[in-house]
Image 1 (cartoon, rainbow, N blue to C red):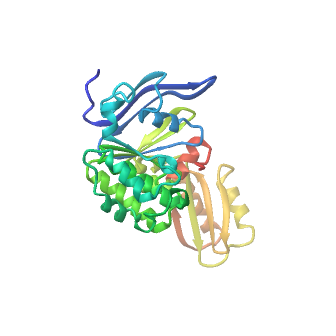
Image 2 (tube, rainbow, N blue to C red; image 1 turned 120 degrees about the horizontal axis):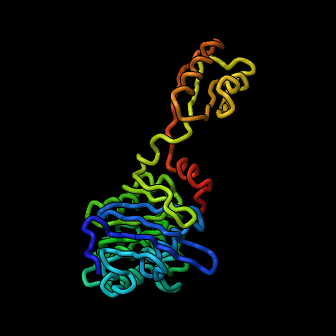
Length: 314
């Protein structure tokens, strides 16, 4: 067995997974740094679920290797299970059991669980503690699933859509909890359909599409630069007649102009300095006095759409 990697909690090397003639994961390699929050993103059918289920030990690699905390999730499952937490969709709970009973049961499976009351208070489960699981709201089910995943004090936790169905306050509280886990040295692997969630929480983002890793980096690294930029032009008086058509002609076919209101428009075009210079020159030539000319910054969602051509739908 190879020696454990001191820097990485998860190491996936050349993983291949097929279902009949369909290739779900195609030679994928990625790592997750210890003590980090790492987001794994991809469109539906991209292969991220298969990859993570292999890391969690639910699937056996057909080709390539997977190591989690230095262990083989299949061969070393008994040694690995007490050290990881997995947040399951639908919580992995029985439909008739009360939320608090399910959490107590999950805690009883661990040698040194977190205090039951602490998790109930921290995740706002007190109000629904005696409610049968089937009657919980979507957000309450997610909070219970997260509590069950971390009650055993895992070194590494896989969290799947942790804030789906939550109200804004519960969502922020969950973000704070995940940050606290990282501060305590816990490694968090996150999948989410909320780009702002990944952008806010993740130290590293892996984007998977068609079974391959197509981009990796911090949110800042991924959103820096790019092929397309936006410029917002705000003026002091309404644009002259034909302004959008005139500006589009001046900027060329690679650029689009969208009128937002009588005093502002949005220019989308190549991410180079010449676009901003040409907008300024057009303003001068057409006696348009700008109140502001601002360069737009790309979001993680912009990067995702640019790379995959598909939305990250739930």
